[in-house]
Length: 221
Image (cartoon, rainbow, N blue to C red; front, side, top):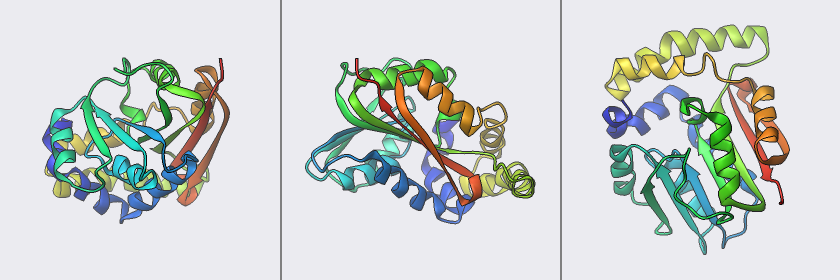
């Protein structure tokens, strides 16, 4: 499914969010708190938008984007951008990296597609250096009842249609909103962070809570 929508994925995201996705990714990178020489891992990198944003923040460092969809990676490699970013095919549940290899990690709009969140978090913690931050950006359901109803009407009613037109695959954009149905709410996800290798966990709602940034620091062993 992700392979089918790879070529138009970025356009669809921009249309569906009114361009806010770029601002949210910039906020995620800012929360990493790394210096310009850092080595950063971007998980489920897709077409590389977040990886490229991170690479601009570490001009003397490096960013590796990893994804299991080769068509997504093929598109990422055609996007240009910073030269200090590279891409690798791999599974976030079994990362092909050494322990304590990275100074920071990011994931954008992908955690809700992971089949085992706890295992994923443990793998991310494993490849991070002690104290290094993991920042996760994800769609979320607002807590305010009125905003929640408005969000649900848009996300479940209009997003499949808009995504189907802009992304060229109606079935895929019916699936993507549904992937949020059983996804943990921000507080529950924060608890999963805490229980699977991270400390000082906190989260920040964006635009009234339609997206949420979670950040945690890899527990020192």
